[in-house]
Length: 363
Image (tube, rainbow, N blue to C red; front, side):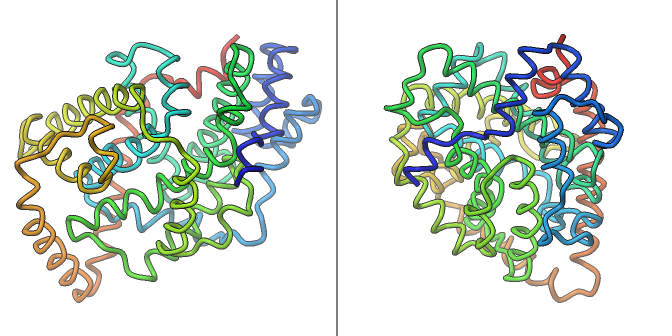
């Protein structure tokens, strides 16, 4: 773990250096190679070519059937639970790392950027989990590599502006990338367990095997993820990562506050939303407070009046999940409904460009 705190992503870092040296031509070549294939850019500069080769070379452990069907475990989660788990679990846990929070706070105004960050993260994850989304040239595949390059750009920028690598480690190091991978696998589903949404062993196995490939595309060392096939193993890795992370700081507090404002506004604005923004905020605070435990206060998560009724919510959701498993075709119907909902979200969020897309296509 100490070694990985000092390691970034050499392939992506080399591409950033080529971007700075060659400008638009390198960016254009990379983008074409991602969308149309490495074979269409035979004259790609060396670092771009090496990154395309790594992304296109599917490891032997990836199942083509998984890529065709998508992340069915995540697709089956009802949209409101997925939204709460993303904000209160995934992103709040990411922001609880003061090293990551320090980078993000330095990139712009919190109030204006929080909704965009929430939307951009949602677009990337949605594109990646859809059936076929990680096939070469598909939106999820392209966006995952673009996110990887945005990490590399942030790493280079921080290092050139006085980042204390001896004190904090390399910015967005391998441990941070592993943390991101866990923030979209074990974290959201552990978060949802407090409302009775628990995965079967088969659902857990499918989830992690799918996200192995996302880890590969993000530039994460296989040493971190290939042995992880269930929540227990993922939880052990998460505990190890958290043990190397300092407690949340004022940057974490500010990011989570802006994030929760944006997330509850989004939930309240959804068609036929059963609650207004304050109602969603109470529920989010209750769930996030229970999940983050001793870190909740440092993250600015207050006590919630809904906390006392979480056991009732959990009992109802657990019962619904039990009956769903007993009814033939019910789980597949949930996956199909979730796929339609995610397709709709992608359509809405794809109207503008994202930070990770702008970075790759910038002049």
